[in-house]
Length: 390
Image (tube, rainbow, N blue to C red):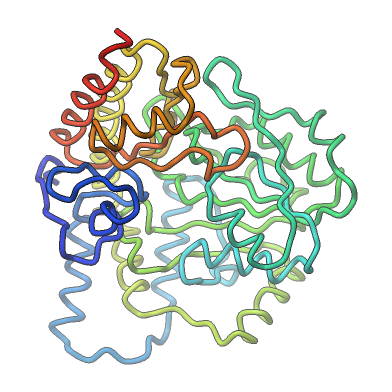
């Protein structure tokens, strides 16, 4: 597990590196790609070994008998999260953006409202709008650099046209690990307004020391008749290119409806993703994740120290994820100015905050899942780009 190894990803069809110059005008020659949420690390050896075994066999036919795959998922959820999953409740989608789109398609109708606690992962609003549904933004409260929910305010915003809530837990981009009380608040909100709750927990393994993620089914058993869970190996093990994710549905009626929609669209998973996921959800995979989080914690502290030393710039305290959410509000700069400094002067490509919805306008998101030497470079460049503030 050599997370310090710098792996050249240029010319490998990496959207993160090969598209950086085109999309952000950050030069490929010496730019730092800190936008797309994938890591610059190899996955655990057990994942590579599973793929090598497929190559060695040499026949890539249809995948059958997914018992071991489902057992690997249930083992992981039980041992890592204390959550008992019935293997029969698991659907495999082409990643969780596809899983989100499938939930919107299955459980809502055109014109229905879908609630998001914003700012939040930008793909949610994209698929909602593309499906002809309405995005209902319930803004998170930025309480001294920590996102919190205000359900009293959200109650007043509901019109009765809303049918679904999509929750990001842990939160992307703010890095919050929601407390049990906060998650209970979400559950109660959904019950009050008769909303389906889709809980995207793709970052649930990427939690820093001192924090504990709680899977939504463990919060309130009375929410299970309206709950759809989404999890995946892809973020945890840096295998997003496998495009596999799991939609886990405890309720019989909700599950039957989802199964019918899956069948109607002719969807089935690719074998590469299943083999990789089964290998990842293992004791070896667990050991790798534990080492990863210690390494990312060092990167997090390094970036936070540099960012917070620049007057007017502040990073939110990351409790989970490898995505640092940095607030430029107190610089007094409009977004075009601080974006220009980051991209043109520091030669770093981050995600722009406004794409995450209301409340994100004065932020940028930086991916710190990269070798520490590159994080150090980023810190030095950002310090120089904003040196006039110091």
